[in-house]
Length: 460
Image (cartoon, rainbow, N blue to C red; front, side, top):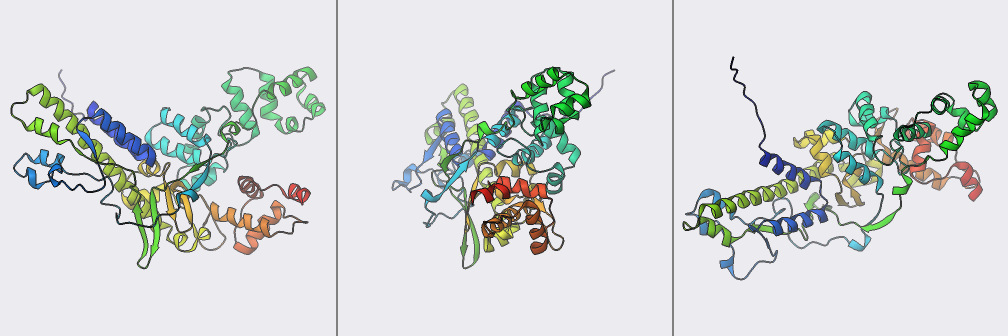
């Protein structure tokens, strides 16, 4: 019996074009320039336009010159500037690029690259970005999944599933929540089978950490030699799997977006310096329109024109999306731009995605490796999506604000009697109605490279 079924299927060409558009979204500004130059080399239909206007107007192909030609060809011949609809081109006083420096860590970029190649669906890729952003330079998950769940909107169960996949990436042990889990991840990655090792690490790790050999023998019943073998084996594991990627180096940052204060309020414009303008090559278009051109040549030119048209539209869409996301961020974080860090709010990708009516994976991609110049300095776009901490009264605070408060407290403390983590917890609750755990303060302090109270006391 014959059965008729209707299915929808993307053509291979369209799929390739969509992949190109998605790739352009996540490119940094310099990578975009390189991608444009490469496309121009590979597609003879495309050519670069000098940003300075030409004196010889005959060389510029305009809509008036092609009014009697086919509508689609007329569209192809339009001059294209990648950001002219979303940025002002008059001369502006730009910040000094010599001051635009940052310290870069490669671990998260290394993980993102692997996650991009892993078998993750669209939803899992967004979740993976949330997890990777919360992995510290030592390779550990910096915050509990419950905290990440509260700010991302994803359940702990789904976060746990994706975390397990992140933990299978390189370096072994990455994404662990504590040393015990870090050791077990590395153990499993080696494919070893040692029941005694597993039992001691899983069930008696506290005693193991204290190297209490006598109590371990008593509690487990294993021979001393076998337990010593476990200690020797652990020496071959890395307690800080991310440290090999944490070598700092200084790079100059050129913002993708500028936000400046004017008399009329906050003004947003894209940085299109060095991003080339594109147009169709007149010679090949004329050749296509020539009735004497054979069909093989025409088909080749038509194919290249279609590719060029899609590439141009993809760049334009990238710029439009970047501008829309930047504008949405400024709207959500307006108090930060007006008053400074203490007024940064918790924000999630989903909020911006709903605001501009795009998928949150699009927001995740467009905010990767992009920077914004603000009245308070230059920040990566990801900076404006901090996790949040609930106050006992009033609105939640971003983790950035809490870390800034901790930093201020340590600076103002009595150097002879430094504040303990418990005292910081009490001060945060008493002064700012912020209730967080001591271990959370310890994590924030570690992220700020602030030593413990005991070590600060010894340094005094």
